[in-house]
Length: 357
Ligand SMILES: *Cc1c(COP(=O)(O)O)cnc(C)c1O
Image 1 (tube, rainbow, N blue to C red):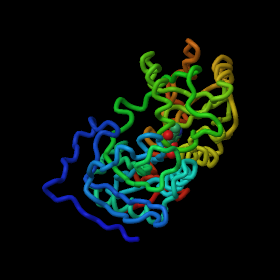
Image 2 (image 1 turned 30 degrees about the horizontal axis):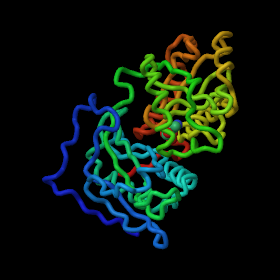
Image 3 (image 1 turned 180 degrees about the vertical axis):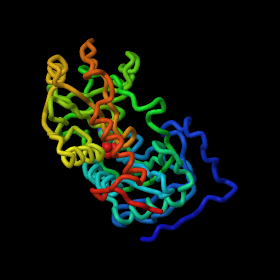
Image 4 (image 1 turned 60 degrees about the horizontal axis):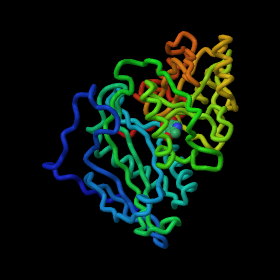
């Protein structure tokens, strides 16, 4: 299926933000969007690119009532050589299909959508900021559209991709964050929907996030939903702790989002000869490591921030500083390495980068 393209009238083009220091995240959207629909019996059909516009949705559309939806998040980068680059975007589309499977949404054709995605990025490539750290954030979304209030999987869906420029995650530099460990709320449980990138997980996280913000912590660290002791992940990032010479992250137990940055970190550390383990570990292990000095570093990983160093962990009214509270050596090395790849500079040993133009 070829993608039909209907371009925005030149007179209706939106102004492209030029002050990159004020871009923020998720505030601006480019001129075009990619869409296609699904109907039972017909499959996915009518892939096209159109001018960005509001959706026309029945108020009874099932997604609005029961949250049957999935999404993705990835970026396109403007390299130093002026090339347009994407990082592991087919992995994002594969994960989208795994999320679809969990949410009983029919899978998309990865090759076809991948081509449509590239066409969208190239069409709106003027929107990719020309500044390292800034990028074009790309948000695919699938929503259930049957106008029906019974609880069952929808028989019609809308898939769309929107994109927009986002700023450097660290406007004041690459500084460690303090994270709040929630022992009151949980994000996900094994057997639930935690491993799918689906709206409900984020709705479930808002109250904890707000309470943590009120206490002065920008991020929540989630413990497992059953015993409230195993480390799971942070906000929209996976998390790593370094004890002695071993870097540890939670295994993919079913309640954790399988991050593509997480996988990249694991592959890079192995390549660099640094021991990295996916194994269960608890908040008590973190506190014990802090007390005996074996905990030397902690960082989150995700598309938005790439690597986010953790300076301290707050649990049950106590602050535990991670080592000297500064950005660790491995965090810095991973961040520098991933950025150089994404902006088309470093050697792409794993074949993660695609140059679109
Ligand atoms: C998206 C996301 C991540 C990070 O995934 P990446 O593929 O690395 O961007 C981690 N945790 C949650 C809950 C997420 O939504």
